[in-house]
Image 1 (cartoon, rainbow, N blue to C red):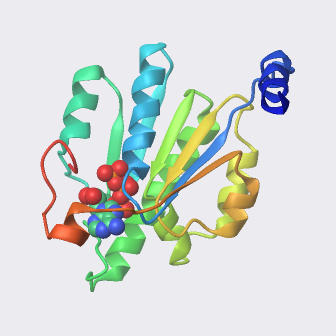
Image 2: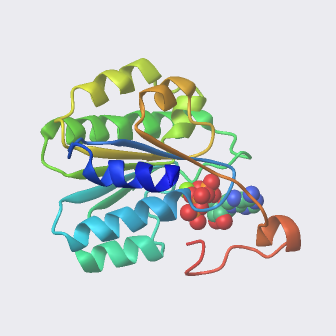
Length: 188
Ligand code: ATP
Ligand code: MG
């Protein structure tokens, strides 16, 4: 009964429209693909959607890039394929800073309905881009623009400002538990 009341209330509640800051973080799989799911759903509603990817190689041509090209959704990757084994962090961080400039321009242009900043938490976590600057830019965006940020180790200041935060948790992972490497269509 208590629960029914709650559901009833939320359905009847004020109809507020707000551009959300959405964060998909945690160690489990699904952060990027959940963001792509929103992109797909919103695209179906003729909303203007785009995605910027950090760290992934600038020439990345994964399933999502191929699909986006067919659908006319802009996905722009800029990076040198950073992994935790990377040695030349000067290049990796410079590319991330450059990509952030592209994101800022898009966020402030007010042209899009949803912008995804994929793997953006890493440049923040490593201190290549100041979180305060990101918060300033997000606060200046037009009120109905949704922004989705993905990646592990989301900084607390960003979580505090966000409207929707999901932490993916690993229960089983084929690589971790069985040594099964990334497979086309599932991982890339
Ligand atoms: P996806 O793009 O499939 O939604 P993700 O964005 O949540 O995954 P990332 O942290 O970006 O995950 O990791 C990218 C790759 O690392 C994916 O191929 C994913 O399967 C793999 N991965 C994610 N979690 C784990 C884990 N716990 N152990 C091993 N590999 C993982
Ligand atoms: Mg990802």
